[in-house]
Amino acid sequence: MPKIDVDLSSDTVTKPTRAMREFMCDAEVGDEQKLEDPTVNELQEMVAELLGKEAALFLPSGTMCNEIALRVHCRPGDEMLAHRTAHPIHFEGGGPAALAGVNVSALDGPRGQYDVDAAAAAIRPENRYMPRSRLLWVEQTSNLGGGSIWPLARIDAVTGLARTHGLRTHLDGARLMNAVVASGLSAREYAAPFDSAWIDFTKGLGAPVGAAIAGSREFIAEAWRLKQQMGGAMRQAGIIAAGGIFALRHHVKRLAEDHANARRLADGLAVLPGVTLDPSTVETNIVIFEVRGALDANAAVGALLARGVRMGALGPRTVRAVTHLDVSAGQIERTLEAARAVLR
Image (cartoon, rainbow, N blue to C red; front, side):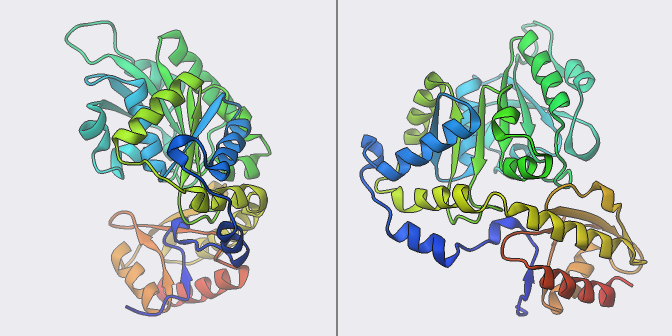
């Protein structure tokens, strides 16, 4: 394995800073299952307030947030509406089917977003032969949509339609804070139209473990039961919850640095003859581009890795690079040097 000087494969590769590690080490702890861990309780209260919901629940991962939401909102045989690039369709091990028995209606639309017309066309009529449309799903920002930010007007339109038809709504907010920093809108504004919403602490926010989901008290009570059932029960979890508290206090505003680095990377890649990329589409910290010419995506990624830069191949000619707190402006210039050598 070549030495990796710049890791742009994902923002999940971030490592906790020294200050975060010290804060976690000193965290006050108790039995989380008995609601006696003060650090977990504090984090849950912070997230509930941040998202404007009645309560929140600390969970080991964002994937568990998504799967619990599916199981609370739906019954086996129900159907959720989501963009065809949505995380649970591609990256949760078939969880919607295996854990919730939920059918998925995959909607189309540019850059990981569907519109109200696409959602309206997918909602099933009442018919015993068909699955019942039960849940509408939005991923903010859209990962495979290149970190695109759902406009609040579009969110209001599709969630309003869902409520008219009696559907529940869920916000996959894995990178919600990137949207908040880039747009200037609050997390509460983005989460308001949804019955449930969650944020991840392990991506751009830089914590080593965990996510938290928020909703009504009734939703969270049922989520607790499913957390226990699915093996997510923890004990003195304040040590890891402290990473989330530190991240919310210290690592949100600095996401703007990741966005600036992504734009600089996109500008530099776009001028290379072996790359197809419109830099204006880069809104947050994800840069997705196409390679052309002799190299396909796997070959390009391998050649970059040989020069110490790691990205990821998403398809035959599609490459993804993700900026984060462990990537500096200087490392972006180092990346562009390697790209100029490879993507000619």
